Structures are given as structure tokens and as C-alpha cells.
Length: 244
Image 1 (cartoon, rainbow, N blue to C red):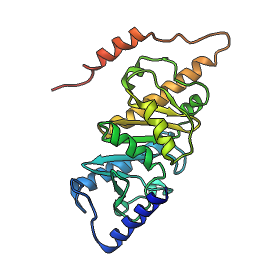
Image 2 (image 1 turned 120 degrees about the vertical axis):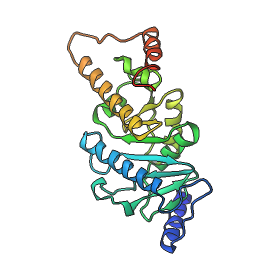
Image 3 (image 1 turned 90 degrees about the vertical axis):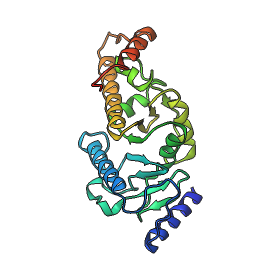
Image 4 (image 1 turned 60 degrees about the vertical axis):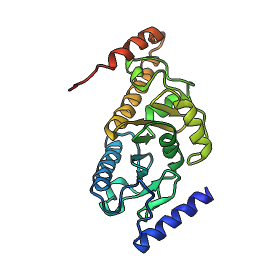
């Protein structure tokens, strides 16, 4: 982490000096694409608060543009963020835009981008999902929307926040999935867009709430879907929505 802090200081120095410092393939300073992406990222981050998926400054959101990752800063309330606060790093974690320190969960975000085709990542401390993460190693298949996340949602073993160990645990839990639970911590999902990543987060929290509700009925055990039923849903979801 000391190396990462050094990279962050270097990025802040470049920003103060008025140099871009962006690697090949990154969005240039002041680009319209980066500005639009930052606006959408901040709106998504604020939505996680409005929808009760995070409290205070917990949770974080990022979006990838080329070889640059725009990410929410550490410890700053989302309603205070402005266009001038745009914060970005390259895929090695070196800060290339802005003066605010990136989220402490940067290792998780970068790990997702390095190992998947993700273009956006959403991490929350959603209460029902976090509760489930303390109870089971995998969310029981309580609803067919499990298929939208690639299959049964695993729980990544606990590790201290902001560490490479947590990022490694998360990657194992994400294998073949687009979302997972983080034990005693929260959720992380990714997608091709911010909207898709957010929708997967919301679906995951809803399924966790559903399972907790059904499991709380005395004398009853929730019915669960079989692997065949889930596979059938996965096939049908391929044609879901508007096309053409």
C-alpha cells in the first residue's frame, strides 16, 4: 500500500503542475468523454446513497475509459463532488487525474478490470447482502435472477478492506460471475455499463432480502431453484429486453 500511496502523491503532483500524466490510450485532460463519464459516475454513486445501499461515504463506484479508470475519491460525501473533483488512475493504480485520493478499495476495482471485460464496477455495504455474507458461504438460489449474475452468488472470505488479500478473495468468488458478496463487508458487481453494474447490485441486495425474509418464517424452509431451472432461465435471459 505504501507504493500505492506514492503513486497517488505522484498523481497529485502532476495535477498541480498542470500535466496530464495519462498513459497511452487514456482519455486526455478535459475530454468531453471523461466529463460525461464522471457525471454519470457521480450520479450512480449518489443513487447508491438514495437507495439505501450505502451509508455516509461507504461504498465506491468506478468506470473504465480506455486504459483509465475514473473512480470515486476516498472519504468524500458524494453530494459534495463537482466536475473539478474528477479522479482517475491507470490500470497499474497510478493517479493520472485529479488531486483527491482515490477510494481505499482501489485494489478491488483494478483487479476486476484486469481480469474481466468490465467497464463499470459498483461496491456497496448494502445491509441485507452484508447480513447474508455473515451467514452462508453462498447465497441460496432463492430467485431466478441469480442467473443474471452468472449463477449462485458466492461469498468471498473476509480480509481487511483496501488490501490485495481482499481483492484476491473477491476474484475467486467472482469466477464465472458478475457479482459476489464480501464476508462481513458488502457487495461488488460489474457490468458493461454503470447502469448494468448498478442494476446487478440492486438485484443482489433484493435477493438477499428475499432469502432473509423467507428464512425467518418459523417452521418453514424456503424452496430453492435447481441447477436445471437456473440454466433454463440463463438461456431465456439471453433474449431478454429490446433488440434492434
